[in-house]
Length: 124
Picture 1: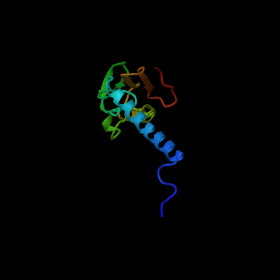
Picture 2 (picture 1 turned 135 degrees about the vertical axis):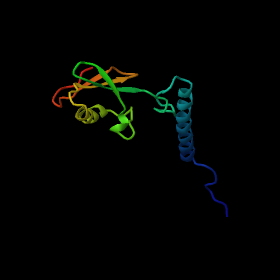
Picture 3 (picture 1 turned 60 degrees about the vertical axis):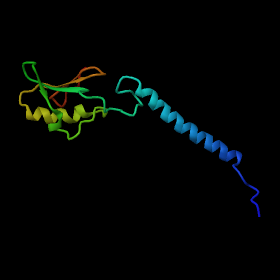
């Protein structure tokens, strides 16, 4: 007996073409982004090429900056996550009596100052 449905149906071919096209587009975008300066959006390296993407400073009462290492407060700081400023500033201010706030210097966005006063709003 032979199967009357030998081969791929039109529906199967459309699914296969769409599946292959999807994979090809995903790979091509990332390959093209590898040729651009790092980190490139949609590139495979994502944020791995972002050494020193953020510098963290405690600002004392005299307005002087003191560099700090965020690893003392966060196990693995993630640059791409938003909101670390609000979470970390109270902890750092607690450890630095007399501090006015924290300054976050980013490589690709404006510098942010977070005051130690929890009711104060951040400024850029």
